[in-house]
Length: 111
Ligand SMILES: [Zn+2]
Image (cartoon, rainbow, N blue to C red; front, side, top):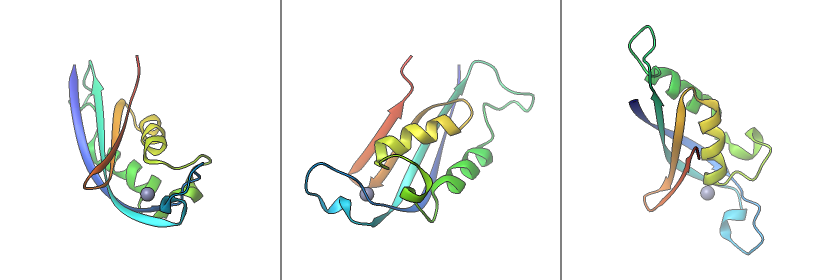
């Protein structure tokens, strides 16, 4: 199995819908680090799992300088965004979103 990992920084905003009081229900922003992990048993004709530039393009177009609430139809927690991004990237099996130095959410395909 071949593995590649790409880290992309995005400036994103969101506001969360929560069933408890939290400052996160207000619009706020993160300079988030998105770590995308892809894998494949076979390499493509170029000898790659997936082109790093393609991964970066998808993540940037999905979230960078955008309000996540305008992009997705669900509550845009880091966990939900990680799962959503994972489904948009070829051969991706895991995405982590580091919203701040101490807060990281990860989605990994369950197989
Ligand atoms: Zn937040």
